[in-house]
Length: 80
Image 1: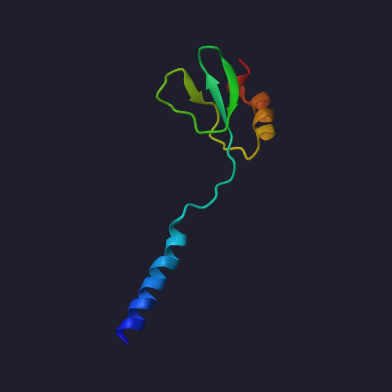
Image 2: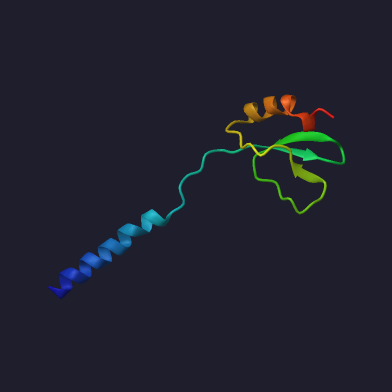
């Protein structure tokens, strides 16, 4: 009885390890404003904000690069 309980516990522990894996994330694109050049670009990773020259132009996370590039044309901060 103890042996079967131990085997069952071990099996549950090994099976639960797949639940702790990170879920596959969807692609994310960000519109980034360089305040020195006043140009907006599309980044596929969240930009680091430790530089005072780089800021996120929009709080929106875009699902495709094309969608982010069309948003650059409509954002007021990118039209300077």
